[in-house]
Amino acid sequence: MARRNPRSAATPAAEDYLKNLYFLEEESAGPVTTNQVAERLAVAPASATNMLKRLASSGYVRHSPYRGVELTDAGRREALEVIRHHRLIETYLAEALGVPWDKVHDEAEVLEHVLSEDLEERIASRLGHPSRDPHGHPIPPRDLAVVARASVRLDEMEPGERGTVAEVSDRDPEVLRYLDRRGIRPGRGVEAVLIEPFGGSITVEVEGERHAVGPDAARAVRVARGVAR
Amino acid sequence: MARRNPRSAATPAAEDYLKNLYFLEEESAGPVTTNQVAERLAVAPASATNMLKRLASSGYVRHSPYRGVELTDAGRREALEVIRHHRLIETYLAEALGVPWDKVHDEAEVLEHVLSEDLEERIASRLGHPSRDPHGHPIPPRDLAVVARASVRLDEMEPGERGTVAEVSDRDPEVLRYLDRRGIRPGRGVEAVLIEPFGGSITVEVEGERHAVGPDAARAVRVARGVAR
DNA sequence: GGCGAGGTTTAGCCGCGGCTAAAGTCCGCT
DNA sequence: AGCGGACTTTAGCCGCGGCTAAACCTCGCC
Image (cartoon, rainbow over all chains, first blue to last red; front, side):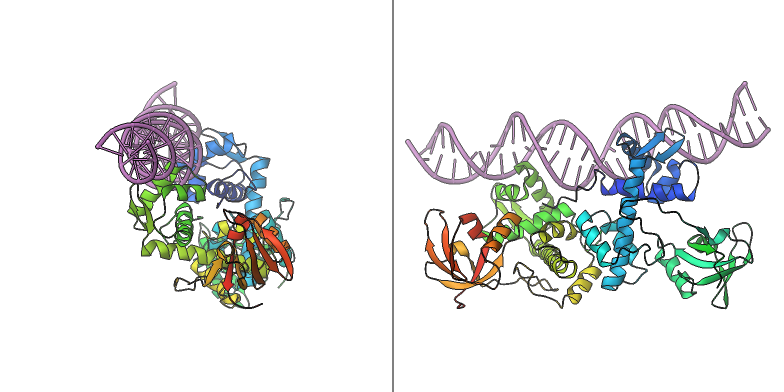
């Protein structure tokens, strides 16, 4: 009774580590550090070490003590599977059940670990096999091929550059609502007007209005360069 | 990240115990024994004792050592909440995603522990607040009032009695398919023709055909008495 | 009324995934 | 080159939810 689906050997906790390792590798080139992992998952560093060792012995990561950690191919597959689940669920909840888009993330966070292959497939086909979730994030395809992202973070743009908002991170619903209120959502044209150095805010023009966006919020936005308004 | 929903203090394992305690109480009047619990949940008796003690200290059950166990009101509420989730999910999966009705049970078994109140409500309203799941089981209402069942188990019927199939247990998909192939499903008229004593089979007439149904399968069927064919 | 069998609980173990405290490693700076 | 601070790992603890083996009740039967 109540066995979770046997798609993989990874527990929900392990899946969370793998998923976040994937994001961390994507964000910061080079090996990921134990501290980064611990902070991202809001656990003590010692807990992270513990799990990383377990993931290493299951073949999901390579862990060089004191030096950092790296996903193996198996680990990356596992991560992509969870990410696919997460984003399909977000899309489904928004479309089929009308869950507000700043709430879908938290629901998906728990459902992603529990979705059977059969349901995954039914949901995907019900949605017409979408390639992006409601926040613009690419949904890994069924074969879990890595999806290339041709976009820059808003805080990496040059003054004067234009583009189209491609993705808005759903990690923090607060930030999501903040950006949404300012019209910064997937599909909108943006121009970087002024970039304050040293982690200051970025002034952008969207829909004819200017907004000074704080660095934390700016990091949550990815922009496809050059596509005119 | 990935915290399950805080609707209740009970873990998934505890919820499974409470749910099955509810069913066991329903089936067998009088207090439920440790062995019954252990068998139903497919765990060792010692494991059941262990969990029952924990449930008792959380106020979900009353446990008299060596004598048996009984749900408290709090425990019953908890159980009904899980059962409501289970049956709503089954109904939703069947209706909205076309999951075959002998498969919905296993999916619901894991999703039931993870459904937020918000999703529960959205699903219920999307379905028009149904009162029965696809197998005919009553879905506890939002206020978790206990639902009276005016039906008898097929193996408790008298020869010559007639009625309408009200519920078919979904616990065993094998049994479910067996009964389905014979036309024994919710809504169908049945007549008990012959009852073999001492746990023998029950001969029933459904849709003009006679079938000898084994006692295990007969126990999975509930019939509303008297409603003519 | 006592004995034994079957049901139940206790004792003690395990893996998971957290934690804190202490020890160890690495690296930059003098 | 070596010292100090930051980062990381190790050691040892905890609760959960399983397990087996052994001790313990209860109750029916003689």
